Image 1 (cartoon, rainbow, N blue to C red):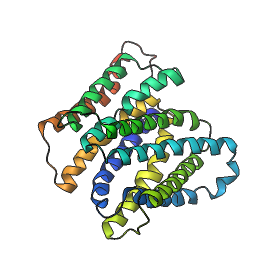
Image 2: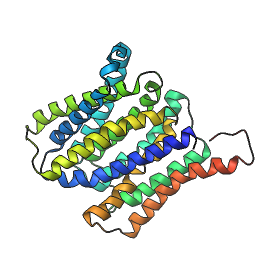
Image 3: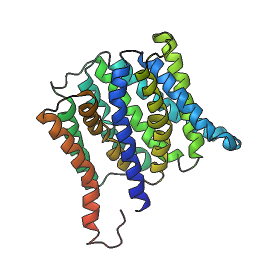
Image 4: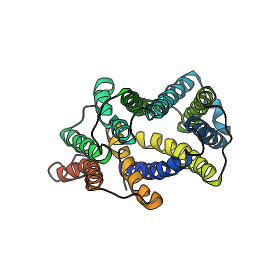
Length: 294
């Protein structure tokens, strides 16, 4: 397996974990407020990554601090915008609009990185966005203030992917992950104290969710994303990450007993088709151009 295929497989594994945690978090938020939950989640991630950074701290310099702060702030903004947006819009609208990072990334790549999507990628993005619409928008999209906040979340996620492409090729990835988790931990702690008040997590489900999210969906997941982006372009990264809602639907069926409509089946199928399209077209093109690389 080549480096690109290995990176894609690792990113798919990340979307599986994020899809799983969607169901766990959904159940846990009935017992704990969002910002307080995320504060515990990211403090755990920060402490875990910190264990692997004990011998690396000498590498910390002003450039690394700035890079970690920028990436951490983009992630914090994304989570905050989505959290507040969900108060004023439906979960379906939020899911669809958040997924629009798949549209923002190619635009930002063209403007900031001079990387324009080819025809296969453009077609795949269109197919995936249509699929996302079928998957999320059960009653149509009615734009409101909450939708605009979630749109800001999607834009923040796009900027995180774009800047990650720049920084992971320059700085120590473990330290970069540590700084991001630190910004998220401090930011969510402050937001929790300001908007929600501190509450100690209670119950086995909440603690299990904090551990799973802190370890696998945060510490491991964001390190893996950075590792993958050393190999993959931002556009390709976004095409793989859009698989998260598909896995969230799957685990919703398995863990929460949710049922699927034909719209959801069609949406999942189109998203999967969009991702596979960017694999199949280059593969077919190799026969015509032996020097082409995947």
